[in-house]
Length: 230
Length: 230
DNA sequence: GTCATAGTCAAGTAATTATTAAACTACTTG
DNA sequence: CAAGTAGTTTAATAATTACTTGACTATGAC
Image (cartoon, rainbow over all chains, first blue to last red; front, side, top):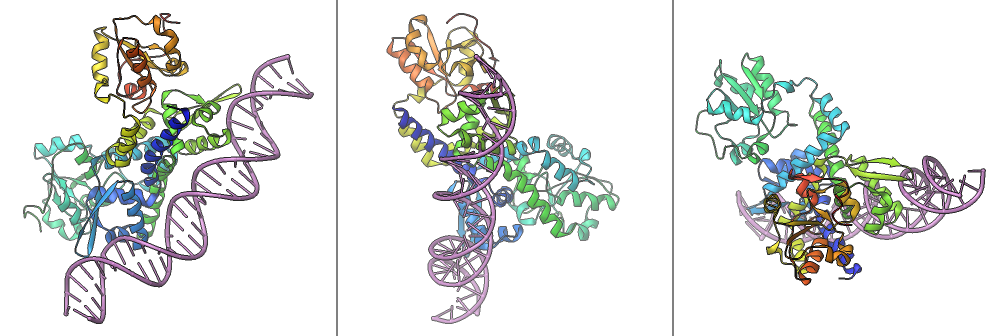
């Protein structure tokens, strides 16, 4: 092995690793990955939610695909993209953790934006599991219905945050509620807790979101809910 | 909260996450991170080892610093850079894992380059720990001496691969050797195993490197070795 | 078949990033 | 203090990347 050949190997090796890194270097692609961690989605729905043009979104998805972080299937007119595997979510989770621990600017940004949020009152995942097992809690999935269908915390009921107000009377008084959504920076659960408390119900948010719950190996289910609420 | 303000928050949020992603998007920066996972190093020594100009290396280090992945200290003429925390190595490890699992091209590259390597014969970390506890093995650290001094597997002796040939006679025959180095793609341990076997000794390599061992929480030590071999 | 929709592709432009070379700073040595 | 080394900074250039626009493809509705 000549030194030259060895250098060439290293360049190729780190070149491959950097393919993954490059895919993670765009804010928009990171946002796409977080949305895909909830459920598979069409190009159009991603573009609308993120506020990008369709062509631009498609190109970001090609970039993610060339790094093998996403895969797609075609169904009629629609192309559905999904994460290529559980390790892809794990990667974005670790990246987020590093950002949280190391970037003072991120901490400041979050503190300012969630100034009203009672973070101390959020429920950790293990605690929610314990409460759920003793049937002491009603778990609300506040994400859009399609994400609930693709996968949710076992036993949770789907109440997209925009529907919550008009469905409030369907939620029994005197019970204890825990709402969750896409992740720690998602505000759906915060809004739900606010509404529930304003109506005199006891409510807290889950500290994490559904993808973290699933990654932790906690019980999940998928499909529509068993009829309880319409 | 207006939708506009919410979009602005998300843009800033993912902008912060992308600072980390951008730092990982260059092959050279990933190589720097791997070297720093072994021990702190000066700019000059990084530049020499990677084959970059001093100025370029310095600039990559600034990029890593602005993402808060590295820190530095100044000692006389030299500036020593180090990883900012254990979670930074964790991040680069997860990135590597994703690359290994998802990029067929990486697998091919590694298979071709290590065609001669008896990977099946490599020792996993837990197995080495077991053997070390029953004193059935001599552990050789084949990295440069400075990396050994900064931290090594507890009980290992320092035999930089370039010194191994002339120090062979200091290594008892009839013992069982396990060599390790910087990580799974580092060839020092492979070369050491080759030399040891050629001299009639029993030898295997550790599957992983020192940073993985430390991250697993296995016993480590630092400083020069207790005199056994000079 | 025509039409509409979802998505990709290709070309062009603006913005960002990598690298080099040279100027400059900081520290040590004599 | 002068000289030498380690490192940073700045400016210039080349290469890459992001985004827009418009053309193009594929599918389904009529």
